[in-house]
Length: 588
Image 1 (cartoon, rainbow, N blue to C red):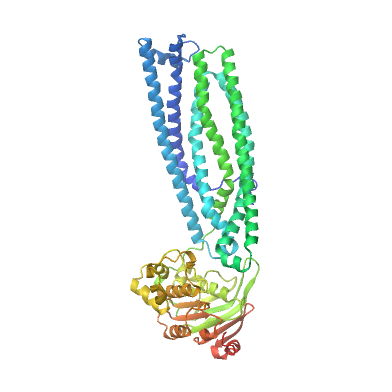
Image 2 (cartoon, rainbow, N blue to C red; image 1 turned 120 degrees about the horizontal axis):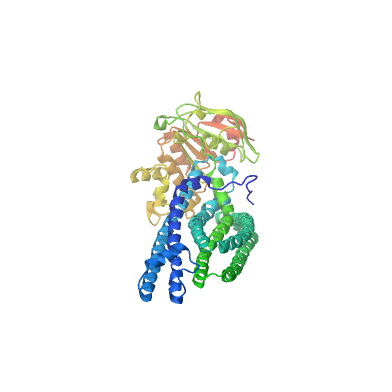
């Protein structure tokens, strides 16, 4: 469950609120104008009813209404037509102003939603890579796909409060003008009703946090089913996943049911109190000697305040029900971004000197010591093999090399220069990675290959695809290079995805090309293709190969062996005991 704000209450999305505060006066002004027009139209019912009932026009009427009646001279028929026309005109004008305000509110809500989503995207793109190691993917997915929509609903509720409050202010003034005693009774009744709504609002806030937590649990189960269909079936866990999903669904159902029951109880309770208040007002007006037209106008005005009062109560309860989602969105938008660019060297930076790891250590948030005191060198212009058993720290070293994470001890240097002094984006622009888990993106084959170079020509794309041995299977696809591959390329084999990833890396012409288990699939690059890439260096300066295949590693000149997060040995490949052991096992 989400933590509540401790101590003094903090409002979520404070920055967004401040941005749109300048629009509040305009929304309030239009709301006031619409209410004044409606109130004036209702006020004219008093002289109209006085005429129709043949009561003395000045009996129990405020002086301004007496003056207004004097403006409508002539026969009874003429006065009635004039008053009716004036009432109709005021109501039509009020509806026009209200429609304009409604359009304004809809536009503001849409703009708030767009701003929030842009800021969420910017936040996710600007946070550093360790952020994704700390936080649950299901939570982040739910915030982006569900909670961001609830922000729009909360914005609509908050914006609806403004004209509703303005209307209550106008109608309250008109009610006090007609009868101060009855107005005071209305205030007492309104205080009782608002007290009841406050109790419901606090309960709705609590249910909001429970809804957010139960929704998050369901998202976790659904992502597991969607992202790991093969694992679920290979290990015979379909029934178990169904049970876990059923439990999460039931929890969410109970949360929604409790919130719905609360809302279903609120409105009848409020309507009952309002009905009692109306009865009291009607009897009090009659016993105080007010005329029928005056009582009628007062009750009519009070009736017209009811929709605005209901809007306020519904909006408050709506905002309370979305508070959990609002705080989740607020949390994600508040995440600190990566350090701003420092170098700005861009194309001037070249990784043409040794990359030196000097006593580097890194521990993950869960406390796992991935590498400890690593000291090694990646020589420029050389193909180097990074060796070691699974869990030895190879992937962590690659992530450090790519500046996705930073050392917690020691430093990494380019020659004599700490790479921490080089802008991370400039550094990454000189590196390309072809990994075992090549994340293909939604789009065509060509768009995936050109992902790092949007200006690449079709000829360049086809050339690197041929270098990666991908051109033949691409040509056999239904639309060739224009075939959509879908997110993660699930329609392709593992080897095909890897070849596209290799082509994408080659297209960047990097100084450092990293093969991170890129040739592990059965139909991945052939040994001849690896040897050709490693010896010709046509698309890169330096190569780092992370692989368990002896035939792949044999194309390298040097090697670094990691064991239990430390460097066990390093040097020319043929001198390494680890490589000689692999040579005795042709399958690697």
